[in-house]
Structure formats: C-alpha cells, structure tokens
Length: 358
Ligand SMILES: Nc1ncnc2c1ncn2[C@@H]1O[C@H](COP(=O)(O)OP(=O)(O)OP(=O)(O)O)[C@@H](O)[C@H]1O
Ligand SMILES: [Mg+2]
Picture 1 (cartoon, rainbow, N blue to C red):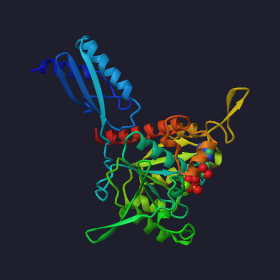
Picture 2 (picture 1 turned 135 degrees about the vertical axis):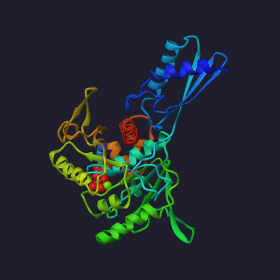
Picture 3 (picture 1 turned 60 degrees about the horizontal axis):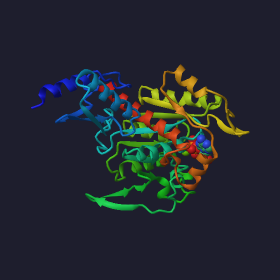
Picture 4 (picture 1 turned 60 degrees about the vertical axis):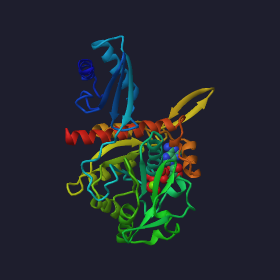
C-alpha cells in the first residue's frame, strides 16, 4: 500500500553513512524495516553492537534525511536493535561464541586484567552477551576482581561428558583456573599442563551464547599464548601498555608474536593504562604523567594500530579490582573510560568483519 513512500524513505536512508564503515546503512543491511502508519514512520536499525557509540547520531541522521528528502511533516521514530557480527575466522568448535578477543601485553602488571574485567563488565552493562576467560593459569586475577573467590563451580554432564558451568557476575560469564585450584597449586605446573588446562577452560565450559569472549592473557609470550592461538582462531587481540619505554619495548615483542605468519592474529587496537594521575590543587584539577606522556598513542600511530583510548591511574580503579566490584558496571566517573574503550573495541570487531566480507 505504501510502497512508493517506503521506497522513497529507503532511498533517503541511502544517504546516511555508518561513520566507521563509510558506507550507506542500506547497503550495510542495517535497515531492518520501515513501517508506515498514517503519517507516522518507524525505522528499525540493526547495529553491529549494543555498545555502538553512534546510536544517537545515526537516529538523528535518519530523521533528518527523511525530513529533507521525503516529507518534513512525517513523524519519524528510529528504533535501534543490534546483532553482533560473527568473526569469519572462528572455527565451528565453539559455535555459540561469536568473537574471541585476547587481552595481551608483553609486560607484566600493566593492567591487562583490570582492563579485561572492566571492558567485559562495561560491554555486559551495555547489553552485550559477554564471557571472560582468565587464561592466566599461574596467577589468576578474575576470582578477586569479580569477588567470587569462594564460589564453587557446578558440573553438568552432557552426552557422557562433564562440563563446567561458568559463574555469572555482573552479567559476565566467568571462567578461571582459580575456581578449580587452591591459589598456590597452579604455580608449580609446567608448560604443557598449563596448555592442557587452558584448552579445558575454553572447551569444557558450558558457555551460553556469547557476542564477545574476552581472554585475559598472562604476561609475556608463553606457552599459553601459543596454545590459545593454535586452539582457536581469535577475532583479534587488544594490546595494553603503559606510556613507559620499557612497556612499549615489550609490546613490540608481543605484536611481533601475534603477527607471525603461523599465528596471524589481527591487532584490534591498543589501550594506554596508567596514562595520567589526576591531582587537585586549590579546586583546580591537573594531570600529571608519572610514566611519561603519549607513548602509547605515538606507538600505535607509528605501527598503524587503532588507538582505543587512555585510562588514568586512580585509586578507585585499583580498589574496585581489589574489592571485586568492577568500575565498568557503573555509569559515571572512571567507568566512562572503560565504556568508551569497550565501544571502540566492539567497533573494531565489526570493522574486521566488514573488511573480511564486504
Ligand atoms: N588504571 C589503574 N589505576 C590504578 N591501579 C591500577 C590501574 N590499572 C591497574 N591497576 C593496579 O595495578 C596492578 C596490576 O594490574 P593488573 O593485575 O590488571 O595487571 P596485569 O597486566 O594483568 O598484571 P599481570 O601481568 O600480573 O597479569 C593491580 O593491583 C591493579 O589494581
Ligand atoms: Mg593479569
């Protein structure tokens, strides 16, 4: 009945571009439906992630295009839903998992686990289905960072095989060797045992449907890294650094490992942690840079890696980790840094997909 008007609206929507992909939203199949009732139009958009930072911008652009090119008296409503893209690299071995992202750094103690925990919490808070695998077999952090050190895992049997049920906290499905062993046990394991343990944590866990499975890696370039890259085709890696030269030197080694032809894991982006300290003096805030300034961003630019943002050095971030309540679940304060990084990471995942398929 409304086909002419509907077609005119769809043509108007062809003038709206996705800011990242630089292609029109109709071509990208982001327009799910255009419903017309009397003088009211409802457009449903399917975004590539619930953490899309451009929702409001896209809504406004769609309304403006319809008013400008079709009829400025129409009442237009734009509803955003999302469907996370599935990494084309993923094997069929974990069909319920759409994307697997490793959080890595060459150097220890730069904040991999802090960023993995908070980005996972933030993605879940924004409506994504998220899992977090603590692959630091020798020094698991997630039981403390999510406040579930003393919780027991449940085991379920399916087809005569035992599976572990991940713990759920703050909307995140969690698995860690720390849920299975006493803290001092894993330290004495040898490389092959750690590799076997990691495979079991990945494959013998009953992950529910996941848009993103984040994997918090141990420091360095160890057996665990090799196992992970051999066991499953990752969507990519997020690299964490501090601005310091020594941290960046180790990042180079880490990136070189991921880029080896036999491993070939895409680098989704880089985050600089402990970038600055906020000081207050006479009601004036200032930033000081105890570990140097801008090292991460300069490095990312020089190596053509997307720079996804900075996180300040803050007592509240450290405390949140220690008390088991990730700051990423909050709406305000330092949570905004993790939210921005989570959104940018989700965008990079979508970009990987479109670059490989369009
Ligand atoms: N932005 C930050 N502000 C304050 N403290 C932080 C910040 N990031 C990390 N920390 C603290 O620094 C310490 C190391 O962080 P974290 O455990 O996340 O690093 P890591 O890279 O995972 O370490 P490892 O290499 O041992 O796995 C922790 O005590 C954590 O609470
Ligand atoms: Mg860690």
